[in-house]
Image: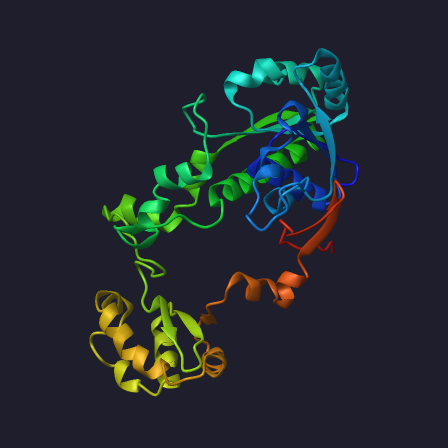
Length: 354
């Protein structure tokens, strides 16, 4: 990857996340920021506790590690000549402009291909068939069904607290660009790779989509619960104030849970002896388990469940999660515009040649 030159005109999260994926792999990534607009808009998306005069926000920092930052006005003819010279040398260009702005910015597909026939042009758009419609993550979460399934009931809906649709789209585009680079090694030809936030969101519906497509079921808000499995997603409070979550996916695991809790009577109870029955009687089962679990220290119970092969975990706040050994090993630091920044890396895979 060290010989790759990636240009990024994209802003906000999805496109910049793709640029950072490649930066982490060793590519040279040049982020082109609109100097008329003050750069990527997320530079100003700050928490109340952040310094309002700081050049970057924590949000901006999350997907902008390892890049060179160049401030340009692509509507300025002289500066566009500089940009074109970069395009002629680039391997990949990442964009996310609205269709109506392509000509204003000189980012038309045919024009870019004329400048560099080997260029891989990766583009993120909002909606699959509405090219003029701006798209933000919460709108996509709403329109593709996520919000209708999230929360505890119809009166208390919720959105996922991260821009998951942007994250899904970023991974889709990364995969498409990597495939295009692989094909270029064989054909010598560049490619145009397009991903929409809308279609990326729909791919993420996976089992919930098939539940509906195959049975007609329409998912409702279940909080942390799973519509097909029980006890899966139930949260229980322990004697020390800690909370645990169960993810019992088989009858054998349920048997192990009951043995740890010394409630083997539940194993043969016809309300709970099979998963389908447990789903039908999940609240009764939850009530049965709550009283027993409340007598345990959460660390002791988790250790016992792990020993028995029962999937479970602690309900951690984000500070606790980021203090784990795995998270600490994934933190990337960098000074951007004089400000110290930190984030979790975007690539979780490890590649070890034979």
